[in-house]
Length: 324
Image (cartoon, rainbow, N blue to C red; front, side, top):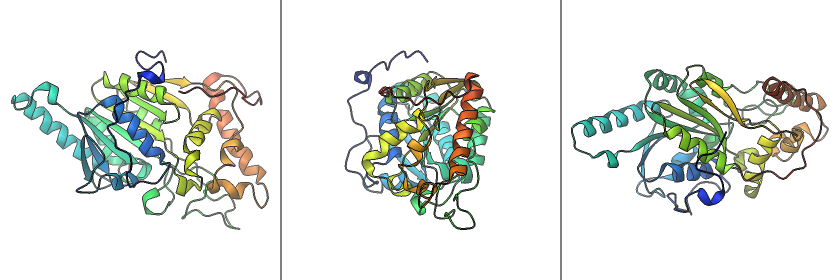
């Protein structure tokens, strides 16, 4: 992807539209993603929040946002976005608000709402061609209620409802659902995966999406320190490792046509990513589960072989990751 605007970190706005000192967990990947997302969109935004971790961000009468924030139930955030978008369009048509005071409508959800409880309303909004942004902060479980398994929980991870036991030693036995593909097959104008560890890639994608009318959908891998059982200061590094190991591909689909915006030429082994997280600790201790680790690696290798047409070389990347 040739970047038009965000070529280096100085191109990202220094204006903070999300104040520090909020009530969310230290190291929250979703919060960092929202901060960068908001910088690109500017002040004229109304966020429609499906119940989840980020609901704790703006609790009446307090808010850290220099924009509007509306709270909905998990299943109906896209319906709320539809009502807001329709109301704004009617007011513009009547001349009651000038075009420069129009607001961008942004749905913000976790993977529980995006993958499970709110999937139907999201697909309906895509089908209607609703002009809105959709940001899913994907921490791969129901983080706000105790880190229960969602359809995003990866194979081999431990959640509070898919524990590693003698009967199920790998923990989560299901493969995560591919939300990117579920959205892409409807051919919305823009779909992308993003990561806060790659802020330039993230910012450029939000900018590019903004030039198109209709649904603009984003999935952000969002490390969750308490749920992933990692130190808060490891959040960005883990998000970076997810890309460098090939576990989290950075890609976009414009009108259904997919292009990868980062292709790791010498991928790190997946265990470099897995072994740093408590939710995968049972795969390494008290004894290594070689079969499960090999299965995860094979899935990643198979994906990139389909993308590049090349079989994995087995070489380990040693180059320092770019700033995204």
